Length: 172
Ligand code: HEM
Ligand code: HEM
Figure 1: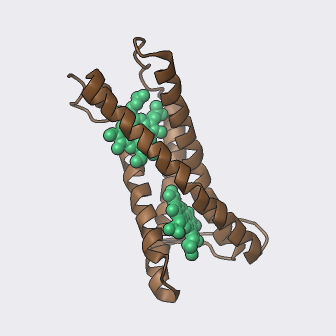
Figure 2 (figure 1 turned 90 degrees about the horizontal axis):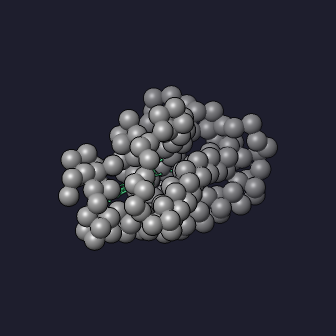
Figure 3 (figure 1 turned 120 degrees about the vertical axis):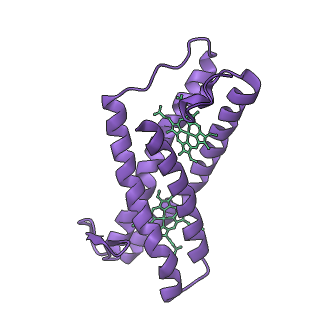
């Protein structure tokens, strides 16, 4: 379950980044064609992340190997904790911003997620969207660090660490 959620969320945030990027220079219905799925996929990431954190509390992952350097364990744990914070904060801020424009989220035409009970205040909404966008840069930096770490374990340490998320790659 943790592995499935890891990969679903990883793919979803990259797709969502590109959806928002595609809408950037468009207006009106053309922008909405990308932004509506962006918002719906974003709410999906929020729900999957909450599920993932609850799942992790109930089913703690196997301990990290003890032969790893202290700095490595601390760096990995810090990156993971920051991931969870951003995976909640980014979509939640998007939802709060949409709500302050008075909109809920249309979930792929299937059902509506209501607007949060915040004041109808477009200026506040724009400010919140600014934070929503600004948090993407630290997210990308974390993703880069995280992938570099995974590759280091796989190709340099050859310690099977990647097998924790890609079953079958565990024995090198
Ligand atoms: C994991 C979830 C999400 C990620 C990774 C994400 C990422 C981004 C990024 C990177 C941008 C900036 C695009 C650019 O200017 O190049 C953006 C813009 C935006 N996002 Fe999200 N987002 C997520 C969820 C949401 C949600 C749930 C909502 C609303 C319900 C939302 C609403 C918006 C809006 C309104 C913009 C501004 C578009 C514009 O500039 O006009 N996002 N998002
Ligand atoms: C792109 C977005 C990604 C995000 C947001 C992400 C997020 C995370 C998080 C939060 C964890 C910690 C799991 C936990 O213990 O709670 C984790 C673990 C892990 N990730 Fe990712 N990941 C991403 C992509 C990748 C990629 C591309 C790879 C492989 C190249 C990868 C390999 C791993 C491995 C091997 C672990 C296990 C580490 C351990 O158990 O200590 N991840 N990831």
